[in-house]
Length: 275
Image (cartoon, rainbow, N blue to C red; front, side):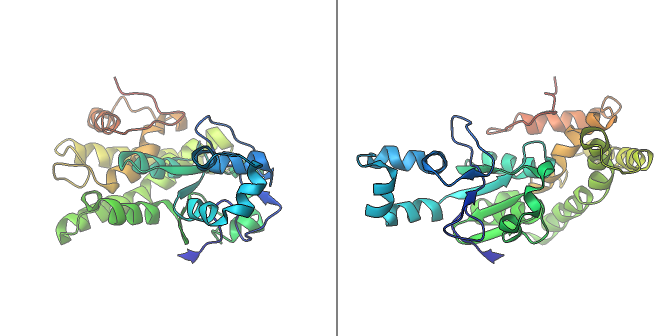
């Protein structure tokens, strides 16, 4: 964890540029100049509540404490829409019913190698979650943080249940990542991975899940989903984009359907609803 500057302003509280934040209307401007438009995107709800009687500049001058409170009390997710790892976090945030600000980062345009972003995550990877003055990077770490902080049912404390959850988190970071996710990346992002090897590992991952889910509704067992299901879900659901059809795996498809039926579920581009 790192001490964060004001969310949305990596590395400096008075930057020349900000990463764009998604407003409820869906408006975004990647690396927009610091301007009224950028501020309104992030603080639109606050401005409407207070009343923009003298313009945004006067709001900042007259009531800086309100602006600071708005910044520090919001969850901010640095996000790339087509990233399965980012979707894991978006999905759990939605299932937990948590409001947050999405900050779009151009993953393919080099934004994650900029000094402002590296100040948040020195690994230069997405996703990154900012919670007040706390910064957390890595999708698994963020899932653990959110579950422990907001609803421990997603990450049980009982030793055996916890260990079973961790087993499938390990699968998400090994067979699923190096198999399913990389096979998709070859097609979608033209990454130079060994497609045949990735697909072979991906099929091994799907077979492993199929065996587990033939007797269990959820990966870690028990009667409810855990962050193990959330961590494994996106790249399994996106497997067809890596030329790995899911038709041969009926138990996996049923599991995908159960996740999609959870209250608060949100989808992402490339994931087809299970009929």
